Image: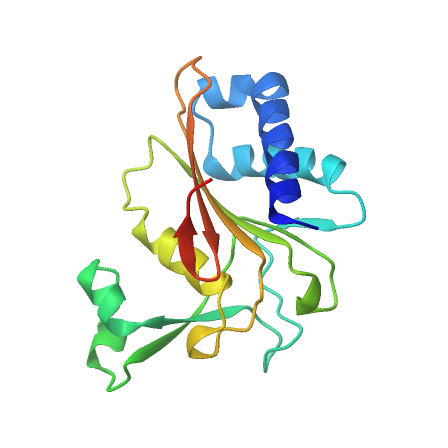
Length: 178
């Protein structure tokens, strides 16, 4: 599937979310609640693929769990470094991850289509870590092996009746504008 097709189906699913589940968004319900509903709309539109939330499996990794490798300096510059990581002599940091939504075919990393990180506008935490993760999910740099064709960062404006959101896309480890 081409990236343009993935984005078209994603946008259709996002439109459905705002149409059928706007109450959740207007009333600023939890990120997990909104993300789950988005995943339901995605599942209806991505026929032949599995859509999973908080999926931490990785068929190709030792131990079978999803992990990313990030550059220590990038984490430190964004105040995202943990004390134990700071004290380690490693330049690369290996972290377990639980992406919000993935579109894939279970059983192989060759069919990892799209990975999505979602935030609400009312979330006060910095979104930079999501961008670092999306970069790692979509590249093979530093031994990352998840092979997602497309990464999407979605920030939804909650607590309002406005249909407002921001989307950032990641391809081959880089933010890409369409």
